[in-house]
Length: 339
Image (cartoon, rainbow, N blue to C red):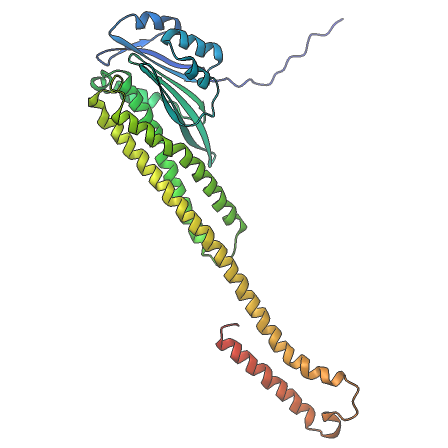
C-alpha cells in the first residue's frame, strides 16, 4: 500500500500584487475607473483620457507588456528590469524616465528603495522596488483636486515626488532628535562604546541618504525649467515647492553630517582627556609612593651604622620626615589638580 505524498502545512505568505493600480482619467481630471492592462490601448485610443499605472516589483513579462502598450524606450525598460540604479532623469523623445531613491524607517533601521517613473503626455507609470510606501495617498490627493489633475499626468508626477520628499522629513527629524540624545551621551561622565557605534552608523546612513537626495535637486530643477511639452507653466510653481523641500532636506542632512563629524571629534577628545586625567592621578599616587619607597630602601642595605641603631629618636624622625615629604607632594599635586 503506497502512502500519499507529504504536503507542507506551513502557511504561505501572500506576495503583494505587481499591478497595484491601473486607472484611466478624463482630461477634465475626473476618474473613469480601473482598467485592465489589456484595456490600456483602448483607453489611449480616446484623445480625452490618460492612464496612471502603479507597479510593485514587476517581472519582465509585465514590463514588456507596458512597453508594448505605451511605447516605452528599450533603454528605460532595461533599467526598470533591475533596481539599484542611480538617481537620474533621462529624456526619450516626448517622454521622461526618472529614477528616484526612497527611504523608510523599518524597525528603527533606515532602509532604501527605488521608484522608477515613466511619464508621457497621456500616461504615468510608477515602479516601486524595495523599501517604499504605496503611492495610494498621493493618488487620492490628486483625485481630490480634479481641476489640477486636468493638467494630465504631470500633476500625478508632482503628487508622487511630493509624497516621496515629504516622507523624508520625518526621517530627518528622527535623526535630529537622536543626534541630540547622542550629544547628551557624549558629555556624560561614563564612556559608552555603543555611543561611538551609533555615531558611526548615523554618519553612514546620512551619507547614503545624501547620495539619494542630492541628485533629486537636479531632477526637480529640470522639471521647474525644462520639458514644456510635459510640464505646463501652471504646474511649475508646484514643482518649485518640491524643489524647496528637497533643498531643505539636503541642507538638514549636510548640517547633521557636519555636527556628527564634530561630535565624533569631541567624543574622541573627551576620551583622550579622560585617559589623561587617569594617568595624572596614577602618576601622582606613584610619586607619593616613590618617596617612602626610596627612604625605606636604604635600610635594606648591609651597613653597620644605621640611624635608629644608635639614637632612639631617629626612627620616629625618619617616619615624620617620610610623612612630611609625602604630605608635601600631595599638597603640590592637589594644587596642580592632578589629584
